Image 1 (cartoon, each protein chain N blue to C red):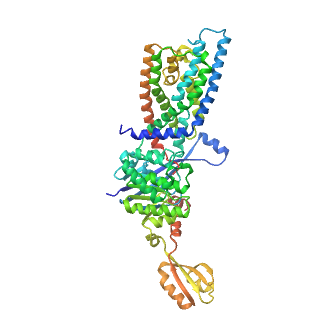
Image 2 (cartoon, rainbow over the protein chains, first blue to last red; image 1 turned 30 degrees about the horizontal axis):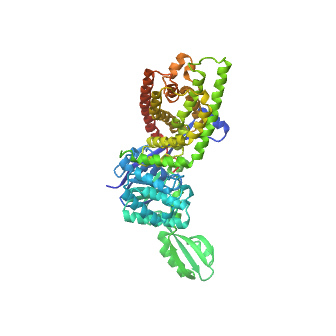
Image 3 (cartoon, rainbow over the protein chains, first blue to last red; image 1 turned 90 degrees about the vertical axis):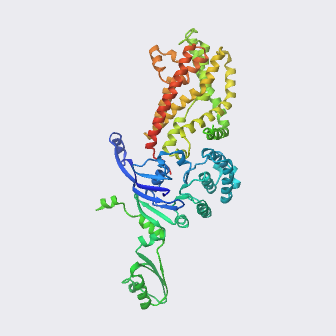
Length: 333
Length: 271
């Protein structure tokens, strides 16, 4: 059985909508208009034990709402989900003892106490044995390089160090399923890289399941073989990261390095010009026409070099992100 | 014991945190004496103005002074001031998330945390309070029945629990309403009156006093203070104890009901 099974999960929020202005604020006192926001719409997915899956989507796409439901923080409007065989929002202790959540924008440690106190509290709450605690914390602080900071007040830690302790606190009880919500947000490049490598190694060594959301494409491409892209509350893509290109991108980027001057007019009949900076010209070419066109360009123009590239993955995901929702699309008709 | 072990660590964390704010607590104890002095002086003036009237609501002059002193002493341990704000704040900004994901029951966690914090508080305010008692010693009626003192100590935790459950329920309004701080202040005033913290309830007309005594609030102030002052006979003390037990059960069930319903509406803001 898969470790996470989600079937037609939906979440609707009722949002109070107010027209701008004082008069409308007064009117709102007597007659409120509510709008139903469908944050998540009939999402279905399956994740196997040991997978490291990236959740992608623009702000407000529904990925955090999905994670909240899978953590048991909120109840769905409809649909079903099983995580390790448990229904998350029943919040059974056996479920909570086997799962961890890191919220990059939230502090879960006790602010005024040394990080070690928060870890000790977690140890007791999760009933980790003394030996297990010593081993796990010893390992993790060494791996993350924060052994010296165990006794430092949390509020005096740097953002990067705090994030590392957040990770340790969430992994202390060796959870089978871990959600990482923006674990590298606000960190410098080196810390990002450290955390990324740590997560990858941890996943390899322990074989636990991670769901990761991040706005940094580097995180996703370094860690996740599989990505799930959510937009407007629906799953837009679920599959391997590198297959996104095939599925969503119908064109390639051709760069010409011209030996002689080539005018725009010479090229425009064949392909769309992305940039024109002699001697370099970049073209956008439909996938299917690419081989024949390259051939023709080589024949007709004097070209020193020609390279064909896939467009950057950020850009493709960006185009998926900016797709209009079905509702907005219907409204525009 | 196995079940309670995590909560030992919760208490330890709460105490450590409280110790960081020791000076704040000490000052609070000191500042808390000011309203006590004002109340005491005010009541003495009332007695003088009435030609040193023998008793009001069954309270002699020194008993009235002591009434407010005892309530202040008891509140050092049982007060749940700002707990409702804290609960409401946790609900509104999603602070609850970090507890909901852990194998811990937040209402119980918060209770243990609160009581541990109060215990440390008592430690640090004791000095200014002893000072206060020494200053007021000529106006104080000291309890003359040690059994009453024992009953009081036995009832401190139940009294604190009643206070906590009421505050927790009030705080949970935040599940349903967004901005409610003004409502909380209204509740504070009401609770001060209904509990007898503002004046002994026996000053009220009989029917009103009886009505107010049907509510749980009096158990947190009026009952313990009048107990120490020897105003209650054995049956009345027993009645109050049973009433406290019954109210704890009722409030507990009500709080659990609100908690379960509220979590269905909780939107886990902020992650």
